[in-house]
Image (tube, rainbow, N blue to C red; front, side, top):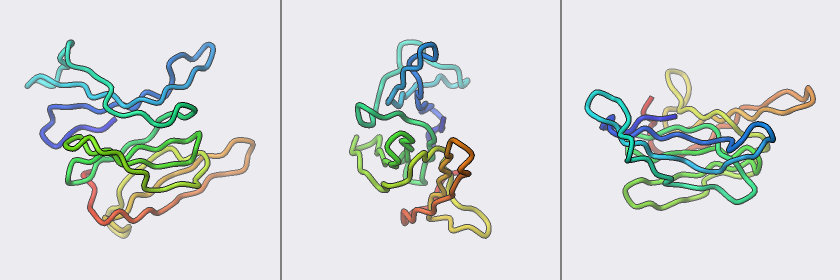
Length: 137
């Protein structure tokens, strides 16, 4: 989940449609919020989908309000712009990519750091993806 800059929209990556049986989902929802932060019941909608055989997982937001969404099943990271509704593939070839965060302190603030988890005891990997804009942490 990430919160928009104006704190009026909560973006939620829906990973599963069902857990028993496991049915993956590939959607990002935008939930409009009231002034007190509670959700507006009638104002939730799907704003982005990854591919049909994929799922969503980690998300981050940059200072321009664009969302970055990981797709672990296909190893991709997408950027979605809520203003223009434009979607761009920014990285590929990262099997199991899940958590996303922008760098802080000693880590480049204009790069996303993506964690890929592997099953079967193979360990994980951290990728650095330069995006040229700072994150909003």
